[in-house]
Length: 254
Image (cartoon, rainbow, N blue to C red; front, side, top):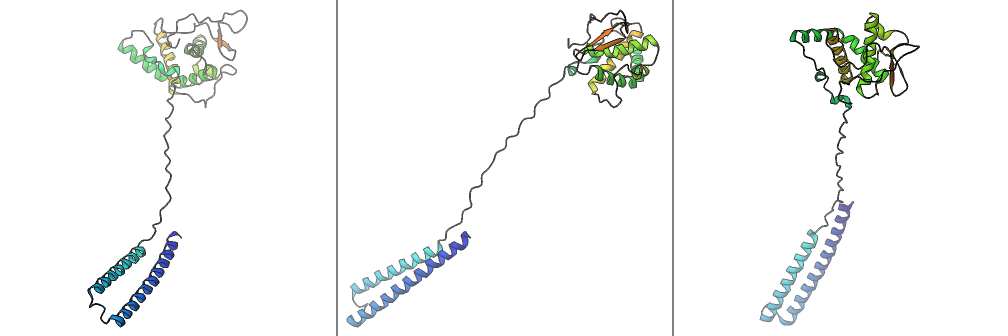
């Protein structure tokens, strides 16, 4: 639309200049004719030649102005485009849980021969299914409990029952109305490693080692939770003692 309007305006300017030029030339010719009739030859007089040259210069300047005005057209300019700078929002750094600060392989402070170390590693691998089941129990019974020794106590309670009854760990876990356990329970690698560490200590104890980092005595095989903590006891009913957490914790979150 802007270009079309500019073309129309330019066309009007050209028509106006053309009419002015025609009028000017007619007047000039008319003047020459009058001078010729009165004086004879217009260009014989020096003064008249100067006047004619001046008139010719005016004609040249007039023609130049017409050419310049005809060539000059308005140029359509586009509206400035606003630019928007979007700054990238830095991603929040993940906050590590207390578990990620513990290297469980460094928490067992016992000296073993290379042969025994290989044997323990093999035995732990044979309990992989039980380790996964115990991990799911620990999450259900004490997933949000701190410190870690209180979580580990749930697994030690399972192992204490297995040692006392001679039953398999899986049967202890799946016994009705005993432990909260869901087969589809998700778990993290860190949670799995914690339970694997407990099984390693338990197997070292069976090899005759002491002070392996047990957090719950063997006679404590039952517990009840109050919504925030679990309270372990050495008898199912009647007279019993609540565990006082007097064993030193092998984990550095306490």
